[in-house]
Length: 131
Image (cartoon, rainbow, N blue to C red; front, side, top):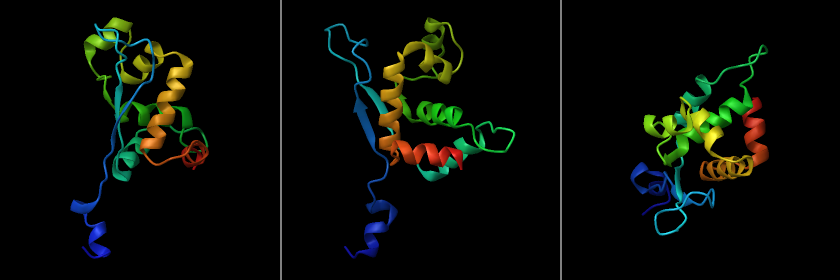
């Protein structure tokens, strides 16, 4: 394979899917920790998230809202859009579900893992959201 062919779509290992332990509170019937599945996404998907994120009066993307949308779109399992799961927590919407079901540190851990899966580092993510 030539160096150029390494960039052809069929040769690129693009979408990562990771199993990560976000909390010790989610266990199966045998007492084993249940991992969350998160995925990376393309810049095209990220662009759509940015377009659908509210902006402040200056036109800047609201960073917290952007991060929440990025996280919810990156989580594959559990299915945050499942109406029964949302109902069990008394919320509607994937973003509200995460904020209700996770402790603050767990939410931060999930955000960090999603950022890593998508090639961001924490400081870069903050700057990206601001711009």
